[in-house]
Length: 346
Image 1 (cartoon, rainbow, N blue to C red):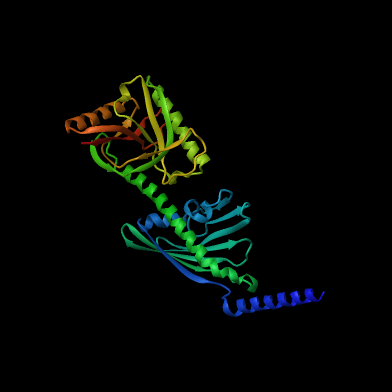
Image 2: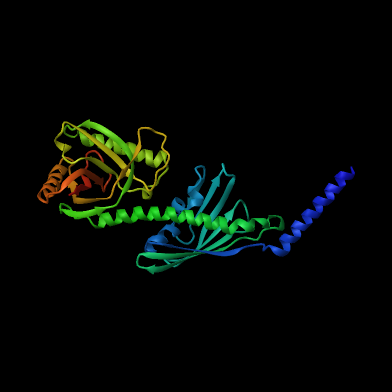
Protein backbone atom coordinates (compact mmCIF):
# COMPACT_ATOMS: atom_id res chain seq x y z
CA UNK A 1 0.00 0.00 0.00
CA UNK A 2 2.86 2.34 0.88
CA UNK A 3 4.58 1.55 -2.45
CA UNK A 4 1.35 2.31 -4.30
CA UNK A 5 1.13 5.73 -2.65
CA UNK A 6 4.76 6.48 -3.51
CA UNK A 7 4.24 5.49 -7.15
CA UNK A 8 1.07 7.61 -7.29
CA UNK A 9 2.92 10.63 -5.90
CA UNK A 10 5.77 10.15 -8.40
CA UNK A 11 3.29 9.94 -11.30
CA UNK A 12 1.52 13.10 -10.13
CA UNK A 13 4.84 14.93 -9.79
CA UNK A 14 6.01 13.80 -13.24
CA UNK A 15 2.66 14.74 -14.76
CA UNK A 16 2.85 18.13 -13.10
CA UNK A 17 6.41 18.66 -14.30
CA UNK A 18 5.42 17.66 -17.84
CA UNK A 19 2.41 19.97 -17.83
CA UNK A 20 4.47 22.85 -16.43
CA UNK A 21 7.25 22.38 -19.00
CA UNK A 22 4.71 22.20 -21.83
CA UNK A 23 2.89 25.28 -20.54
CA UNK A 24 5.96 27.49 -20.04
CA UNK A 25 8.39 26.25 -22.69
CA UNK A 26 6.31 24.95 -25.63
CA UNK A 27 4.07 27.20 -27.72
CA UNK A 28 0.43 26.15 -27.93
CA UNK A 29 0.56 26.54 -31.74
CA UNK A 30 3.26 26.67 -34.41
CA UNK A 31 4.07 29.02 -37.26
CA UNK A 32 6.54 27.94 -39.91
CA UNK A 33 7.39 28.41 -43.58
CA UNK A 34 8.38 25.91 -46.28
CA UNK A 35 9.72 26.98 -49.67
CA UNK A 36 10.22 24.97 -52.86
CA UNK A 37 10.88 25.62 -56.55
CA UNK A 38 9.59 23.67 -59.53
CA UNK A 39 10.55 23.90 -63.20
CA UNK A 40 7.13 24.72 -64.60
CA UNK A 41 5.33 28.01 -65.32
CA UNK A 42 3.17 29.54 -62.59
CA UNK A 43 -0.15 29.09 -64.42
CA UNK A 44 0.47 25.34 -64.81
CA UNK A 45 1.49 25.02 -61.15
CA UNK A 46 -1.35 27.12 -59.74
CA UNK A 47 -3.93 24.98 -61.54
CA UNK A 48 -2.70 21.98 -59.54
CA UNK A 49 -3.38 23.78 -56.25
CA UNK A 50 -6.68 25.60 -56.81
CA UNK A 51 -8.45 22.55 -58.25
CA UNK A 52 -8.83 20.11 -55.36
CA UNK A 53 -9.41 17.15 -57.70
CA UNK A 54 -5.96 17.86 -59.16
CA UNK A 55 -4.54 18.57 -55.69
CA UNK A 56 -5.48 15.19 -54.22
CA UNK A 57 -3.90 13.32 -57.16
CA UNK A 58 -0.35 14.40 -56.30
CA UNK A 59 -0.39 15.51 -52.64
CA UNK A 60 1.34 12.79 -50.66
CA UNK A 61 -1.12 13.05 -47.75
CA UNK A 62 -3.82 11.64 -50.04
CA UNK A 63 -1.78 9.50 -52.46
CA UNK A 64 0.10 7.61 -49.72
CA UNK A 65 -3.04 5.86 -48.49
CA UNK A 66 -4.90 3.16 -50.44
CA UNK A 67 -7.89 3.28 -48.08
CA UNK A 68 -8.70 7.00 -48.11
CA UNK A 69 -12.11 8.02 -49.46
CA UNK A 70 -12.56 11.61 -50.70
CA UNK A 71 -15.73 13.58 -51.47
CA UNK A 72 -15.54 16.76 -53.57
CA UNK A 73 -17.95 19.68 -53.27
CA UNK A 74 -18.83 22.36 -55.80
CA UNK A 75 -17.35 24.58 -56.95
CA UNK A 76 -14.54 22.11 -57.60
CA UNK A 77 -12.05 24.88 -58.31
CA UNK A 78 -11.04 28.11 -56.58
CA UNK A 79 -12.52 30.00 -53.64
CA UNK A 80 -15.34 28.10 -51.95
CA UNK A 81 -14.31 24.65 -53.13
CA UNK A 82 -14.00 21.93 -50.51
CA UNK A 83 -13.37 18.26 -49.83
CA UNK A 84 -14.01 15.87 -46.97
CA UNK A 85 -12.08 12.65 -46.44
CA UNK A 86 -12.22 9.50 -44.33
CA UNK A 87 -9.40 7.01 -43.93
CA UNK A 88 -10.69 4.08 -41.85
CA UNK A 89 -7.44 2.12 -42.02
CA UNK A 90 -5.43 5.01 -40.54
CA UNK A 91 -8.33 6.14 -38.32
CA UNK A 92 -8.36 9.72 -39.54
CA UNK A 93 -10.81 12.09 -41.22
CA UNK A 94 -11.11 15.75 -42.00
CA UNK A 95 -12.25 18.60 -44.23
CA UNK A 96 -10.34 21.04 -46.39
CA UNK A 97 -11.52 24.37 -47.82
CA UNK A 98 -10.13 27.04 -50.14
CA UNK A 99 -11.11 30.30 -48.41
CA UNK A 100 -9.35 32.79 -50.69
CA UNK A 101 -7.89 32.86 -54.18
CA UNK A 102 -5.80 35.43 -56.04
CA UNK A 103 -5.15 33.68 -59.38
CA UNK A 104 -1.52 32.62 -59.95
CA UNK A 105 -0.48 34.41 -56.74
CA UNK A 106 -2.14 33.28 -53.52
CA UNK A 107 -4.36 30.57 -52.03
CA UNK A 108 -5.60 30.29 -48.45
CA UNK A 109 -6.59 26.86 -47.17
CA UNK A 110 -8.31 25.74 -43.99
CA UNK A 111 -7.80 22.15 -42.86
CA UNK A 112 -9.91 20.60 -40.08
CA UNK A 113 -8.46 17.30 -38.88
CA UNK A 114 -10.08 14.57 -36.78
CA UNK A 115 -13.07 16.63 -35.59
CA UNK A 116 -10.79 19.41 -34.31
CA UNK A 117 -12.90 22.60 -34.29
CA UNK A 118 -9.79 24.75 -34.79
CA UNK A 119 -8.29 24.58 -38.30
CA UNK A 120 -4.75 24.50 -39.57
CA UNK A 121 -4.32 27.60 -41.72
CA UNK A 122 -2.11 27.31 -44.80
CA UNK A 123 -1.37 30.27 -47.06
CA UNK A 124 0.41 29.37 -50.29
CA UNK A 125 2.22 32.02 -52.35
CA UNK A 126 3.25 31.49 -55.97
CA UNK A 127 6.02 33.56 -57.54
CA UNK A 128 7.38 33.12 -61.08
CA UNK A 129 11.17 32.91 -60.94
CA UNK A 130 11.30 32.72 -64.74
CA UNK A 131 8.97 31.80 -67.58
CA UNK A 132 9.55 28.11 -66.78
CA UNK A 133 10.16 28.12 -63.01
CA UNK A 134 7.91 28.86 -60.04
CA UNK A 135 8.70 29.40 -56.36
CA UNK A 136 6.05 28.07 -53.97
CA UNK A 137 5.99 29.18 -50.33
CA UNK A 138 3.77 27.62 -47.66
CA UNK A 139 2.98 29.71 -44.55
CA UNK A 140 1.53 27.38 -41.93
CA UNK A 141 -0.27 28.23 -38.68
CA UNK A 142 -1.32 25.21 -36.61
CA UNK A 143 -4.29 25.27 -34.19
CA UNK A 144 -3.77 25.72 -30.46
CA UNK A 145 -3.23 22.47 -28.61
CA UNK A 146 -4.08 21.73 -24.98
CA UNK A 147 -1.12 21.33 -22.61
CA UNK A 148 -1.11 17.51 -22.68
CA UNK A 149 -0.89 17.48 -26.51
CA UNK A 150 1.66 20.21 -27.08
CA UNK A 151 4.44 17.67 -27.43
CA UNK A 152 3.03 17.09 -30.94
CA UNK A 153 4.38 20.50 -31.94
CA UNK A 154 7.91 19.10 -31.78
CA UNK A 155 7.37 17.07 -34.96
CA UNK A 156 4.58 18.99 -36.74
CA UNK A 157 6.93 21.07 -38.89
CA UNK A 158 9.13 18.10 -39.89
CA UNK A 159 6.10 16.02 -40.78
CA UNK A 160 4.62 18.82 -42.88
CA UNK A 161 7.93 19.49 -44.66
CA UNK A 162 8.42 15.78 -45.41
CA UNK A 163 4.93 15.60 -46.91
CA UNK A 164 5.68 18.60 -49.14
CA UNK A 165 8.97 17.11 -50.31
CA UNK A 166 7.26 13.86 -51.36
CA UNK A 167 4.34 15.78 -52.86
CA UNK A 168 6.65 17.89 -55.02
CA UNK A 169 8.11 14.74 -56.60
CA UNK A 170 4.56 13.62 -57.46
CA UNK A 171 3.68 17.09 -58.75
CA UNK A 172 6.75 17.19 -61.00
CA UNK A 173 5.82 13.82 -62.50
CA UNK A 174 2.20 14.85 -62.99
CA UNK A 175 3.09 18.18 -64.61
CA UNK A 176 5.73 16.47 -66.74
CA UNK A 177 3.10 14.20 -68.25
CA UNK A 178 0.65 17.08 -68.75
CA UNK A 179 3.21 19.35 -70.40
CA UNK A 180 4.53 16.52 -72.60
CA UNK A 181 1.00 15.83 -73.84
CA UNK A 182 0.30 19.55 -74.43
CA UNK A 183 3.59 20.02 -76.26
CA UNK A 184 3.03 16.98 -78.45
CA UNK A 185 -0.45 18.16 -79.41
CA UNK A 186 0.80 21.69 -80.17
CA UNK A 187 3.72 20.40 -82.24
CA UNK A 188 1.72 18.14 -84.52
CA UNK A 189 2.35 18.65 -88.24
CA UNK A 190 0.77 15.72 -90.01
CA UNK A 191 2.66 13.99 -92.84
CA UNK A 192 5.85 16.07 -92.36
CA UNK A 193 9.07 14.16 -91.75
CA UNK A 194 11.09 15.44 -88.77
CA UNK A 195 14.12 14.43 -86.72
CA UNK A 196 13.83 14.26 -82.94
CA UNK A 197 15.97 13.18 -80.02
CA UNK A 198 13.87 11.15 -77.63
CA UNK A 199 14.65 10.68 -73.92
CA UNK A 200 14.49 7.35 -72.14
CA UNK A 201 11.11 6.01 -71.07
CA UNK A 202 9.76 3.32 -68.78
CA UNK A 203 6.75 1.46 -70.17
CA UNK A 204 4.38 -0.90 -68.39
CA UNK A 205 2.60 -3.10 -70.86
CA UNK A 206 2.01 -6.41 -72.55
CA UNK A 207 3.78 -8.56 -75.19
CA UNK A 208 1.55 -9.77 -78.02
CA UNK A 209 1.72 -11.93 -81.15
CA UNK A 210 -1.25 -11.80 -83.49
CA UNK A 211 -2.48 -12.19 -87.08
CA UNK A 212 -1.75 -9.42 -89.57
CA UNK A 213 -4.93 -10.02 -91.59
CA UNK A 214 -7.01 -7.00 -92.61
CA UNK A 215 -8.56 -5.29 -89.55
CA UNK A 216 -7.52 -8.17 -87.25
CA UNK A 217 -4.32 -6.46 -86.13
CA UNK A 218 -6.01 -3.20 -85.20
CA UNK A 219 -8.83 -4.97 -83.35
CA UNK A 220 -6.17 -6.83 -81.39
CA UNK A 221 -4.36 -3.56 -80.58
CA UNK A 222 -7.59 -1.93 -79.35
CA UNK A 223 -8.34 -4.95 -77.16
CA UNK A 224 -4.85 -5.00 -75.62
CA UNK A 225 -4.77 -1.23 -75.17
CA UNK A 226 -7.97 -1.53 -73.12
CA UNK A 227 -6.36 -4.29 -71.05
CA UNK A 228 -3.29 -2.17 -70.28
CA UNK A 229 -5.30 1.02 -69.68
CA UNK A 230 -7.72 -0.72 -67.31
CA UNK A 231 -4.88 -2.36 -65.42
CA UNK A 232 -3.01 0.95 -64.97
CA UNK A 233 -6.09 2.97 -64.00
CA UNK A 234 -8.12 0.42 -62.05
CA UNK A 235 -5.63 -2.07 -60.58
CA UNK A 236 -2.82 0.43 -60.03
CA UNK A 237 -5.10 3.39 -59.34
CA UNK A 238 -3.33 5.79 -61.72
CA UNK A 239 -5.12 8.89 -63.04
CA UNK A 240 -4.90 9.93 -66.70
CA UNK A 241 -2.55 12.82 -65.92
CA UNK A 242 -0.11 10.46 -64.16
CA UNK A 243 1.04 8.68 -67.31
CA UNK A 244 1.87 9.40 -70.93
CA UNK A 245 0.43 8.38 -74.29
CA UNK A 246 0.33 4.63 -75.06
CA UNK A 247 3.22 3.39 -77.21
CA UNK A 248 3.31 0.32 -79.46
CA UNK A 249 6.80 -0.99 -80.29
CA UNK A 250 7.43 -3.42 -83.13
CA UNK A 251 9.85 -4.22 -85.95
CA UNK A 252 9.83 -1.44 -88.52
CA UNK A 253 9.03 -3.60 -91.55
CA UNK A 254 6.90 -6.38 -90.05
CA UNK A 255 3.76 -4.88 -91.62
CA UNK A 256 4.57 -7.28 -94.50
CA UNK A 257 4.49 -10.39 -92.26
CA UNK A 258 1.51 -12.71 -91.78
CA UNK A 259 1.97 -12.55 -88.03
CA UNK A 260 3.06 -9.51 -86.00
CA UNK A 261 4.71 -9.34 -82.59
CA UNK A 262 4.55 -6.11 -80.63
CA UNK A 263 4.83 -4.60 -77.16
CA UNK A 264 2.10 -2.16 -76.13
CA UNK A 265 2.79 -0.10 -73.04
CA UNK A 266 1.93 3.04 -71.10
CA UNK A 267 4.78 5.31 -69.86
CA UNK A 268 5.07 5.54 -66.06
CA UNK A 269 7.46 7.66 -64.00
CA UNK A 270 8.90 4.77 -61.95
CA UNK A 271 8.74 1.03 -61.43
CA UNK A 272 6.13 -0.26 -59.03
CA UNK A 273 5.16 -3.70 -57.85
CA UNK A 274 3.03 -5.60 -60.38
CA UNK A 275 1.42 -8.86 -59.27
CA UNK A 276 -0.15 -9.79 -62.64
CA UNK A 277 2.39 -11.72 -64.74
CA UNK A 278 0.64 -10.70 -67.97
CA UNK A 279 2.16 -7.23 -67.58
CA UNK A 280 5.82 -6.26 -67.47
CA UNK A 281 8.10 -3.23 -67.63
CA UNK A 282 10.26 -2.32 -70.61
CA UNK A 283 12.92 0.38 -70.65
CA UNK A 284 13.25 2.46 -73.81
CA UNK A 285 16.73 3.91 -74.29
CA UNK A 286 17.37 7.47 -75.54
CA UNK A 287 17.48 7.56 -79.33
CA UNK A 288 17.52 9.70 -82.44
CA UNK A 289 14.31 9.21 -84.39
CA UNK A 290 12.88 10.00 -87.78
CA UNK A 291 9.31 11.07 -86.99
CA UNK A 292 6.01 11.55 -88.83
CA UNK A 293 2.57 12.30 -87.44
CA UNK A 294 -0.21 10.40 -89.14
CA UNK A 295 -4.01 10.50 -89.04
CA UNK A 296 -6.27 8.09 -90.89
CA UNK A 297 -7.06 4.38 -91.03
CA UNK A 298 -4.64 2.12 -89.17
CA UNK A 299 -3.76 0.29 -92.41
CA UNK A 300 -2.85 3.65 -93.98
CA UNK A 301 0.09 4.10 -91.58
CA UNK A 302 2.16 1.75 -93.79
CA UNK A 303 2.84 4.50 -96.33
CA UNK A 304 4.23 6.77 -93.58
CA UNK A 305 6.40 3.95 -92.21
CA UNK A 306 7.77 3.30 -95.70
CA UNK A 307 8.69 6.98 -96.03
CA UNK A 308 10.62 6.84 -92.73
CA UNK A 309 12.49 3.69 -93.82
CA UNK A 310 13.32 5.20 -97.24
CA UNK A 311 14.66 8.32 -95.52
CA UNK A 312 16.88 6.20 -93.27
CA UNK A 313 18.25 4.23 -96.21
CA UNK A 314 18.87 7.40 -98.22
CA UNK A 315 20.81 8.87 -95.30
CA UNK A 316 22.73 5.60 -94.95
CA UNK A 317 21.39 5.13 -91.43
CA UNK A 318 20.63 1.81 -89.83
CA UNK A 319 17.28 1.60 -88.12
CA UNK A 320 15.70 -0.26 -85.24
CA UNK A 321 12.11 -0.60 -84.13
CA UNK A 322 9.17 1.62 -84.98
CA UNK A 323 7.27 3.25 -82.13
CA UNK A 324 3.61 4.10 -82.65
CA UNK A 325 2.50 6.65 -80.06
CA UNK A 326 -1.29 6.96 -79.99
CA UNK A 327 -2.09 10.66 -79.54
CA UNK A 328 -5.77 9.75 -79.39
CA UNK A 329 -7.13 6.62 -77.76
CA UNK A 330 -7.31 3.75 -80.28
CA UNK A 331 -10.95 2.73 -80.85
CA UNK A 332 -12.54 0.28 -83.26
CA UNK A 333 -14.15 1.87 -86.28
CA UNK A 334 -12.36 5.20 -85.82
CA UNK A 335 -9.36 6.84 -87.47
CA UNK A 336 -6.08 6.77 -85.54
CA UNK A 337 -4.01 9.81 -84.65
CA UNK A 338 -0.45 8.75 -83.97
CA UNK A 339 3.21 9.67 -83.91
CA UNK A 340 5.45 7.24 -85.83
CA UNK A 341 9.06 7.21 -84.61
CA UNK A 342 11.78 5.18 -86.35
CA UNK A 343 14.94 4.91 -84.24
CA UNK A 344 18.07 5.42 -86.38
CA UNK A 345 21.82 5.16 -85.86
CA UNK A 346 25.04 5.01 -87.82
